[in-house]
Each structure stands twice: as structure tokens, then as C-alpha cells.
Image (cartoon, rainbow, N blue to C red; front, side, top):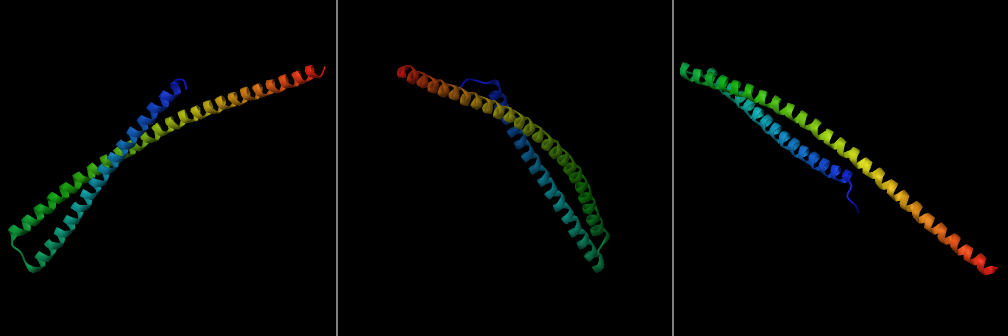
Length: 149
């Protein structure tokens, strides 16, 4: 089979699509990790609020109260940062999905062109074979006619 530039385009497009897929997978992993971190921080905050409530019900000194409040504020800050990171990762995932879809669309277009090219080539070969068969049949009939004379 001879070299065809379309085949090179298909191969490069496939590589680009695969790379976009790997990027999307990595971006999704990062998003999931950040979501888990956010969830963990939120659970810590709930747990420490519960502990603070229980300690207040039993009575506690001001120093311990300040420690709890400071820790809960630091958890709030961490939750805020994790929320921002999660939004950033979500935006990256969205962009990666769009990139992968674009690469897939391009590859599909090239594959369609290649399929059409292959169908045309197959039709051309079928027609050539039909011509050869017709010629052979015509030649055989002509020999029979000339031999019958």
C-alpha cells in the first residue's frame, strides 16, 4: 500500500486525541482528590464543632475555647482554599473534556474520509475486475464465433 497523507493525519490525530484523553483523566483524578480533601475538611469541621459543643455543655476554660475556635477558623480557611481549588480543577476538567471532544471529532472526520476513500478504491477494483471478466467473456465468445465459421 502506498503512503497517503490522510493516513499520517489520522495517526497524528489519534495521538492528539489519546494525549487529550490522558490529560482529561489526570484532571479528573486531581478534581476527585480535591473533592475528597474538601469532604474530609468539612467532616473535621463538623466533628470539632460537635466536640466544642459537648465541651461547652460540660464547661471549659477560655484557653481551650480559644484553641477550638482558632482550629475551626483554620479549618474554615482550608475549606475555602479547597473550594477554590475544586472550582479550578472543575474548570480544567471542563476544558479538557472540550479538548478531547474536539480531538475525537477531528479524528472521526479523518476516519470518515478514509472510509470513503477505501470505498471508492474498492468500487474501482470491483469495476476493474468486472471489466476484465467482461473482456474475457467477450474474447471467449469471439473465439467460439470465429471457430464456428
